[in-house]
Length: 220
View 1 (tube, one colour):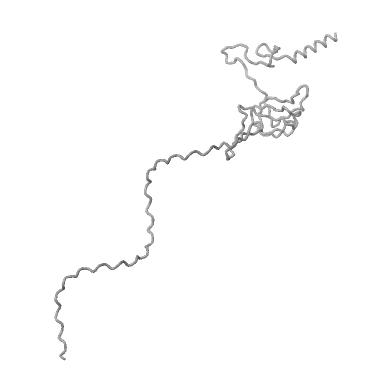
View 2: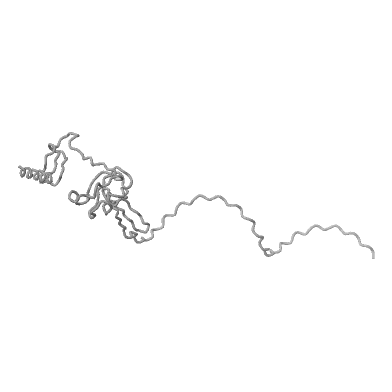
């Protein structure tokens, strides 16, 4: 009897370890030989607005969240590498039991990247935001180069992208004449000029009338 119970327990544990749960059919049906562990898609197509369901990911405040332990090697041999959640907090992650710690986070989906570290208390593990491009920001270095800052903390600086100077273009058309400006203030009088040369003698005038006789002089 004891041997039978042992065999049944081993069979049950083995089945649970290699089974998946499918919930688009009766709950708790197992799906063996599949690559997914859970299937929540609709099993049939219809026009119902409630056909199919979404998945509500766990909401976790990463500014407070700390791993319970350093990751049991048998249960979590990757030390939580790939763990996915939705962060609801804004601020920085704790300094302990949160990978590198002190990371700036804001609401959004994050995954824990820990591919090489064997610990979650310090080490190289970090929370990485999930975005379409992974690009957090870019910086113009004002010297012809640009630096791309990625969400995982890495950066890339381009080479000098300044091209050669092109030939000078043709002169543009002359613009219309602007309006006349206001008259300026009158300047001070200048110095007298030099005396000019004497002009030619004028023509002789007409002879005037004969004058009156003068008084007789004294007798000598």
